[in-house]
Image 1: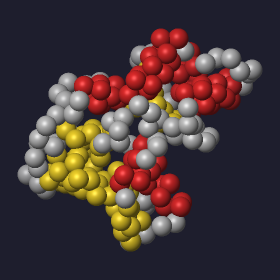
Image 2: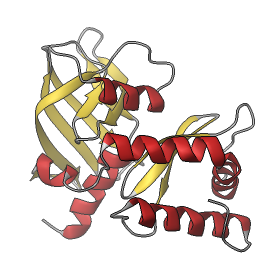
Image 3: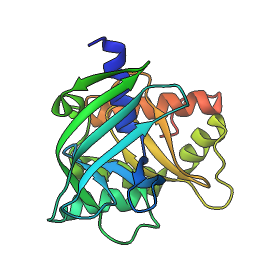
Image 4: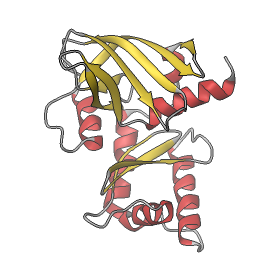
Amino acid sequence: MNPALFDAARALLLGSTRARFTDARRGQLAFTPFCLSADGTALLRATAGAPVSIALAGDRGAPALVLRGRAASSPPDDAACERFRRHHEAESAPPVQLVEPRALLATGGERHALDYANLVAEVLFDAATETRMVRHMNDDHVDALRDYCAHAGVACRRRPPRMAGIDRHGFFVLADAGPARFAFPAPCATALEVRKALVALATVARGSAPGAA
């Protein structure tokens, strides 16, 4: 597959917080909250045991990533549920996992089958590392989060911004309209590289010397 298409599919998988589907009962477009667990498992709201087909999509006319599988009957572990709640604060019930996932990238009237395991390989940090970074940003660097949002035109006037999740390619900040995605200029392999990337983004956002994050 064209590397650019693969990158587009991975960006949709990492950057989406909701997925669309057709409600079989009503025959109309509906949406479900979505995120990944630390091991790359797709988490969403669905009926346990039921077949699932969802689409992660950006702007109209852009590629869409279609995921098909089955909603697991057993709930995800505590770390996965916690990551889901960080992204979706209003969702109190635990999510379900998408098992036996199959991935297709729909673009330009064509569909390209993708290896789901390859899409999520080496893009997420383990749960403990991510939780440590998220807590550090939320406890000590709310001003930096506010600067990221202001620079990107993301409103956070009703509440202080909170980091919801971070991976090797970017991070989410909870703002007035929900989770907002911020991409790193280049993938980060370690927590130290993440720190340097966050400092660089804060420097650009503030138009001043580094040292904010």
